[in-house]
Length: 96
Image (cartoon, rainbow, N blue to C red; front, top):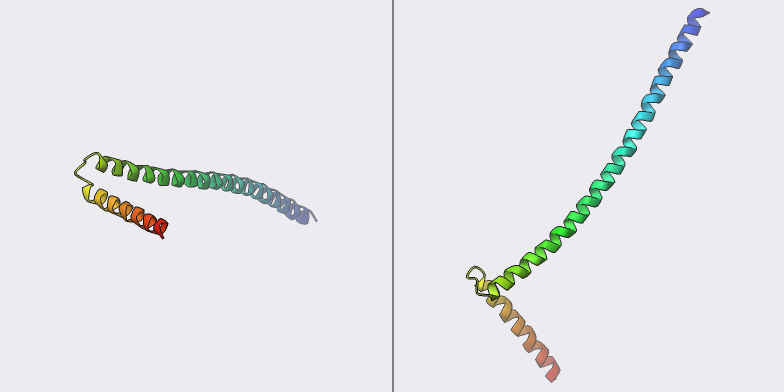
């Protein structure tokens, strides 16, 4: 009978350890989920910032070329021609 009691005690100890490990794993899992959510938010913010900076870069590049920079003269001429065509189209529509 004492052997059965020892086996039961051993099982109780093992179950207790398993429940403790389970609690620790659940806690760690929640912490990792929170960290993942924070990382996802940071990535979204950085992506928006990158897009904003790309837009600002293109604007600066265009302004620089309008000021006489040799690097982007072709792009500037193409953009100006495109704008002139758009203006002509608008004028033609208003004339009709």
